[in-house]
Length: 284
Image (cartoon, rainbow, N blue to C red; front, top):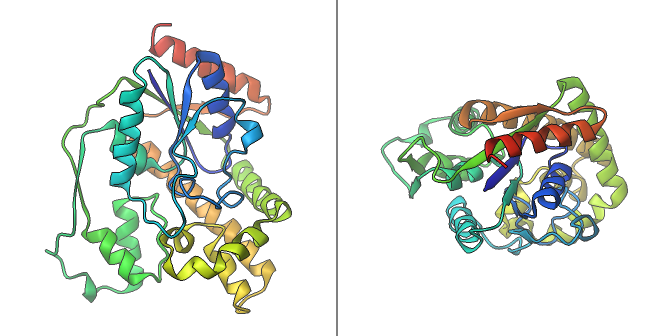
């Protein structure tokens, strides 16, 4: 069986994935576009070794930040894990909706179609078009080359039915509470050493798609280049994280058949409701 735990950043997906893996004897597969990269730990809120509780975790820390890892690569790797573990419950966890969609549906990827002259558009218009194509995309509005390339890429969804028997559980909470949690989470990341983590990766930024894309990393470059204060950079991380959470909600609500669960102050209640959903869906 395949269980997918989705939702915006900071909502509690990791904790739920561990709970479900322990309860049903499963394995966990990363579904976050940035957590595939080594050394990007604090800023991506990557699970720590001591938090894994001896549960096998896949597709974490598999690429150097200088390597390019595409959605096609993810689709291929994730489907291999599914094929290699036919008798294991598999729990996908993460907020990269298109990555998950590429695995569950029959998606075919084709490269660069040049039927539209995107050069005529402003950066603002290109960014708007990219968000319409995928609300969860994280390309910087000023990265014109990557915006155009993203728009030229064609994905063909050949069926609207799952290729696998899968249950998608989404976690939601009040927007104001979530945004406060995100803001605090960013400050906690700073306390954990995010600035030092990004500083160690700074020299690789020019040749790294990941570093120039990931929230929590790209914003701090201005601080190291003495173009902005650390305080302002932190505020931008918080702002971009909140905006990203909003786009994630939009994507999951419109692109995938998610069963939503409320995140309660007593998270054990949320965990129990998730367990009931799994048992009901898979007739356990």
